[in-house]
Amino acid sequence: MWTLLTLMLAIPSVFASIDFDDITGVASSATEAVGSQFRKVKGKLMSSGSEEYGRSTTRGDLTARDGFKLIRMPDMHAQEEYNTCGTHNMARYLKHIGYTVNWDAFLEKATDRSFFKPIATTDVTGTMPRSARSFLRQYNSNFQLKEGGTILDIVQNLVRNRPVMVLIRCGYMAGGAAPSMHWIMLVGYDTKKRLLYFYDTNGNGIKQTSWDQFRRNHNFDNNYGALDFALNHLAQVKAGSMIYCGPADSAQNGTCTARGLR
Image (cartoon, rainbow, N blue to C red):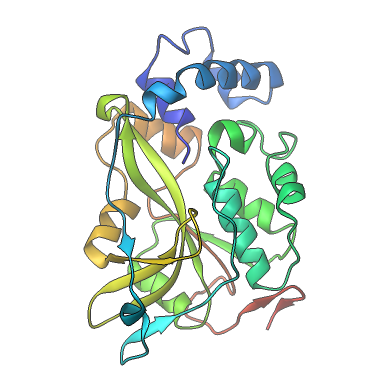
């Protein structure tokens, strides 16, 4: 999960000494100041609340049937670091298309503040969609980011054997003043039961969510006012953000490998 940008506006007293220009700039001193203040309060704030975004499946839920599709992906160890759900999903995706991923080395590279400017390092802010796309394109130029994505966009990818990494709202902080965000990996659907299936970052079990529940979590503009402004304009985090590897037009065929697109 990641929450820094929303917290900056939800708790102004904590960040009163940090100017807007510092946040939008690339000064490492500002980043350090934000991170230091954030780490002091994150434990207290993270206890504010959570929202359902899926439940575990049984073996029977995952049996082949009409209208059902499931893509199996490589195993990953459970997420241990605080704000690395995005990094965790990027690593799983790269493993899926044929890259060898050493987690420790990958985590260090994915949180390199020289890359993730202006709001640097995953351990402070989490992985923002446009940064994630840019980072993944260092491996394969066919990684795409769609903002405002729909279930139709997702199914168009899944039916063509392309997993979809999506950013959802999974709870709230500061008494409901700020949303908590989380990356998950969509890998399947059931059109008759109106379900989506996904890998979470707490292990390798597959979870499921209804289409209606997913829409609420994925389209997370929920009247936060200034916080919505921070997400949409300062961090360029848009509701409906989804990342996949394939053609820019998700209705076209083609899957990614470590060598490109086939």
